[in-house]
Amino acid sequence: MMKKFTLIALALFISLLAHALSYSTPTRQSAHSLAISAGLHYQEHGTLPQNWDEITRYLDGTDIDELFPYVQPSKRYAFVSEPVQISLRDHTKAKIAMMMRSSFRDLKVSGEFPGFRLKGLTKPGRYLILQSENGDMRARFVLETDIRKTFREAGIKLPKLDSLPTFPHEREYQRNRIFLWFGLTLLIAALVYVASALLPKLRSRKSARKPST
Image (cartoon, rainbow, N blue to C red):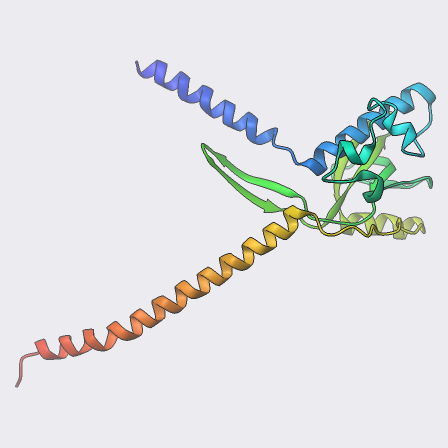
């Protein structure tokens, strides 16, 4: 019986771990789709894509913004024609084929439990569509500080910023933080008030219990 329970618990743990590791976001999903399409174009033509027609032809010709309405890639992404190589933190180098025009903070998962997920935001960064030294294409979230350093050292201007509003998940996260801090402030104020009201009563009771000399 104990062995059976242990196996069930282990299977549940592995399932939850796999779900946590496979957790994705709309921004991450769209970036990986762009990388796959860019890779297919490179395999067929031997060059990196330079326009959206060369991307969408591998996505059944669907309008890219209709396919990923949360991101709207045609407005948030830019093709990079200049030869810009970025050094990644895993000690590899890659050529930037496409990149988000503006930095943002993506969702990240800091924990995974049955019915309970801890969420946070990454540091500011952008998704880049990169070509590895072996020709493979991949999507990678890179911190804004690393991106700006790379373009500054290459002497190349960053793409023009997009004019789209902040992602909904960023606005929701900041709004929740404000509500959280407001609630904590009220709770602390209430505790201080209760303590200030009870302390004199406790002192008076304590002094009343002292035997008179």
